[in-house]
Length: 256
Image (cartoon, rainbow, N blue to C red):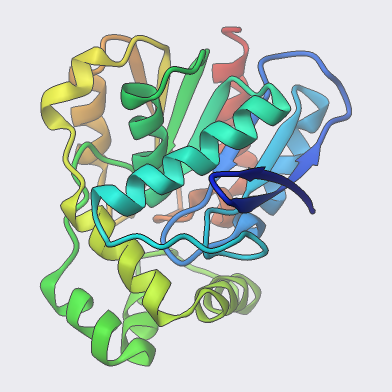
């Protein structure tokens, strides 16, 4: 993986580019995740360059000393800006926590963007109280819960569950708990009208973590936002139904 240095730490990213056309797509993983969650989106690299990055304390990226909430979210936003400036990518594609980071960049950072793809997203991302407790006290139970029916996946294969669980365990309890707590404190419902770039909200049909009505609310409040529903998928639609997810993103990219 490549690495860009900023704010005293390094942020890792993997870039696929079989063309230099288009705006460039910068993909940001969710809580406890890593760049591998976007493995199937490299297929879009014939359409535009695709970058999958790893937030601080995830995968091969450096460490960030930050409390859960806006402090961590701001640090993650700095990671995204650094990679975007290094690669020139102008469309941010974030899943869950990654979508919250993308929204934060669009709202609070001076950076030229062409668009946003918000997958498994919401203007607010409340987390079940029991899950927050398990993340602090019983990590195995938290992982089991998240991989239950219609949470991260609808009908996953053993391979997909293995990829997801391995990434979460490698990230570790402390960082994963910080990620979910950061999601729980995230709320930009009163700022969505400030988003001034075209936006696509992508939701898995069966997603119980960020259900379809979260994405419909985004479309109602962001001035230029459309919703795409991925059938037979839950929260990690880009892994579970990559062809349908990529099709929705490619149609969105045709606008640029």
